[in-house]
Amino acid sequence: MLIKNPLFPKWRFLSTGDSYRTIVSSFQLGVSTVASIVSETCDALWHCLRDEHFPVPTEEMWRSTARRFHERWNFPNCLGAMDGKHIFIQTPANSGSLYFNYKGTFSVVLLAVVDADYRFLVVDVGSYGSNSDGGIFANSVLGKALRDGTLNVPPPSELPGAPELGKVNHVIVADEAFPLKPYLLRHTLDAASPQTREFSIIVCLGYGASLKMYLASSVNASGFSKALQNRATEDDHDWQWASVEAQNVRELYKEYFNSPAEEVAWQYDHVNHALGNR
Image 1 (cartoon, rainbow, N blue to C red):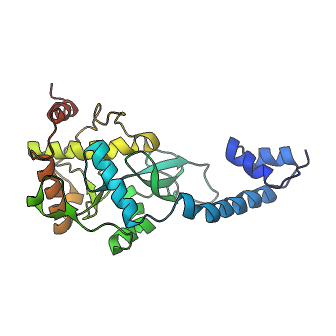
Image 2: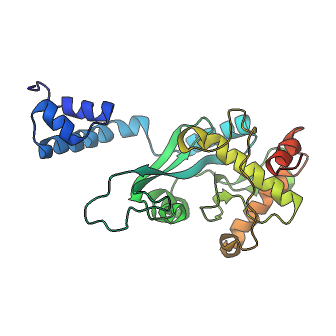
Image 3: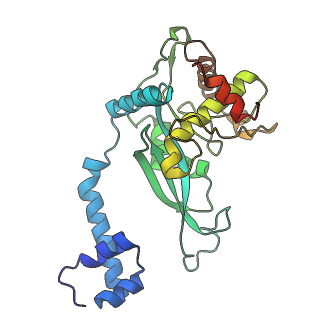
């Protein structure tokens, strides 16, 4: 088959996932030619479409995301839910254990933040599978921008119905693979009190509800039918090393979610179900 349009191999690759070798046979091209077409076209698509379809979030975009989280998942001041996903790959030559992950396969990692309706807000892809989610986040453009305060995050604001708590940071929610930060809220593994366990389940629910479609979380469409299990431990190193500011932010959210301002009639039934209490 002689190709009339040099983009045909590119569309074939994206639409079917065929290997370069299969495409080479179909279009009578060299492997290096196909690889060049795919790489150059992907770069062109990204540079032409990124500002329209994947812009750097503005402050108003973050505010809109936070409003939607509160509306849909009863979680105010939430900017998104974050997790990492291993994308399986064939082992690159001479790569040693760089891509070897804890699941016993080879992968690169997709780190993503999604909004309340499962849409991607920020992605970082290509990190070695051997790296942890927390390590990838710390070294990513996203992590550095949050740390440096250059990501247009809205300033702290009051939580609805709780002016006594003062102005509270906007946060991204994540699981225990990530560190506790003033801008990153994760559930604690400390189950010392009912209030702490209650808060941990709520964070898990808010995190899982938004990641379920893309990153294989366990919460269904109602947001609360199957909570992540509370995995208590006496040795939570991340919590011990969190900054005082990060711990204070977390305590404010814990107090809020255990207060009459944010309680909903059915939350204790769902928390008890998640903890195995019938």
